[in-house]
Image 1 (cartoon, helix red, strand yellow):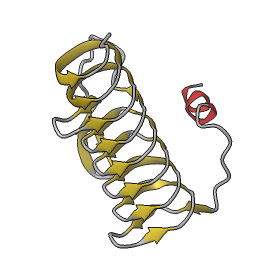
Image 2 (tube, rainbow, N blue to C red; image 1 turned 90 degrees about the vertical axis):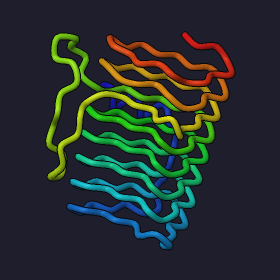
Image 3 (cartoon, one colour; image 1 turned 60 degrees about the vertical axis):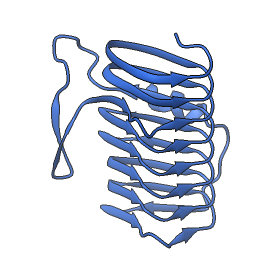
Image 4 (cartoon, rainbow, N blue to C red; image 1 turned 135 degrees about the horizontal axis):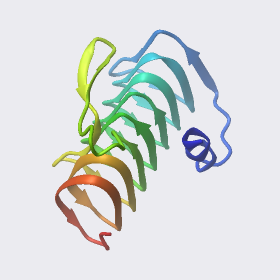
Length: 178
């Protein structure tokens, strides 16, 4: 149901490039001149996408630039680069350390308070479940964060809405924080 909500919230989009591969890696310096949809075990974006990115994989890592929206579902989702529009992500371990130009929608982590942060193996690496926005994160629009546990740091240029069982908070919020 969450996937349908994330995809429905994105509006109507037609992907010009659709890729299904075990590991998809857009190298630094490479450019996709349209929307990109990727399904695989690992999706790594170090280059530039001039459009939207839709990714479904165990691990989704965006280190490069996406000029449109990012919609991602994975056990691990990292936004370390620049997304010039909205980010809609869900995963067991979600990290936002980069810049989001507009709104951020995140759901993830363990929703069972007795479990806390759970280490999980994703694509050969151990990651800890939870939602984290790092100190270098900048969110240009509203942010909606729903999860079991996490840490909210960074800079929020508009409103921040958080619903979590356990939260460490050390962020700058220019709008309202709830």
